[in-house]
Length: 405
Picture 1 (tube, rainbow, N blue to C red):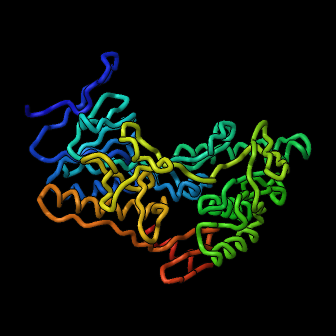
Picture 2 (cartoon, helix red, strand yellow):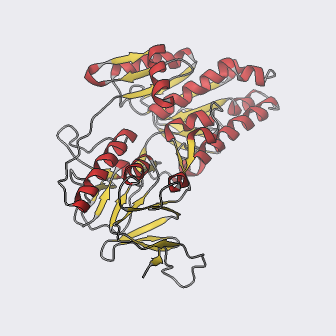
Picture 3 (cartoon, rainbow, N blue to C red):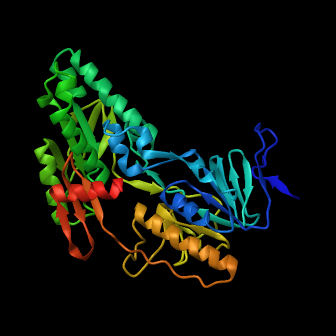
C-alpha cells in the first residue's frame, strides 16, 4: 500500500471526511498535544528522517504564561498564538490532525480519537495540564480560569461588562459586586493577573470610565498558604507582596474558598465577598490518558523513567506536565513547568533518533534556569540559579527580554 487512512472511524456511525497520509518506510512518531513539549519535539524531529504526526484538539499553539495579558488587553490573542500548521511548510514528513484523543491502545499501537483511530510506531504523550478545581463542581461552573485563549477573552469581556454595569448600578450594594474582583491562588498566574488589573486601575480605567470612582475597585487575592508565590523563594515572595500592595491589591493569606454561589464568595473563615467575577488560579492537574497499563498512574501523572519511557509499556513516552519523573533533586517528581517539557522534548528527540539509527540513548536531567513573575508594568521577581534573587525594574527588564527575544 502506498498510503493508508490516518484516522479510520472505529464506529460506522461516525460521519467524517477521510484524511490520508502517505505510508512510507519512515518511522511514524505520533505526538499528542501541541503545548510547549509537543511543539519543541516537532521542531527537532522535523529535521530528521521520521514521519511526525501531531494531534491536538486545537489547530494553534498558545503561550499560556501570557494569557493574563490578553485578559487585561495588554496583548491580543494573535500576539500569543501561532497556527500548528506552520510546521507543514517545507516539511513533507510532518502532518497535523485536529482531534480529541479519548484513549490509547498499546497492544494495537493505536490512538483512539473522537474521529477514529490513528496508528503509530512511537507515541509521545504531551497532553499537559488543565485547571484543578479539586472536585468542586460549583466553582468549576461559576469561576473563570486561564488555560486557553477563549478563557482570556471570556474574562476580558466579563471585566468590561462589569464596569459597564457598575456605571448603572442602583446603590452601593449593587455597585460593590461589580467592583470586587476575586483572584484565587497567589502563584505566578494569580500574582501577574492581580498586578495587571492593579496597573489598569491606576493608569487606564479612570480614563475609559470617568463616571466610575476606581478607588472603590477592590482586587482580592486569596491564597491558602501563608505567603505570596509559595513556589518561589521567600525573598521573591516578600517583594511580590510589597509590589502588589502598592497597586492596592488586598491579600487574604491562609484562606481557602469554600464556595462561590449567587455572586457570593465564602472563605474558610466564613468571611463573604460579593462579586460577579472570581478567577480560579489555584492549581492545575495533569491531563491523563486512558488505556495505559495499571501502575503507570502516579497522582494522576504518567510514570516515566529517566528516558521518558512510560512504565510497563513499549514505544510510548510522556513529557511535560502529564509525566511523572523522579530524580535525586526531585524525589516527588519534576515540577509542572514549561521549561521541563521543553528540555524533555529536546532530549527525547535525540533518544528517539538514537533508537531508530542504532545509537546510544542518554538519560534526561532537568536544568533549573530560574523562575519569574511580573507584577504590573515595570516590576518583576526572579529566582535565578545559584541563589540569585532579582526584583524591581531589573527583574522586569529580564522578564521582557526572555519573553520577547
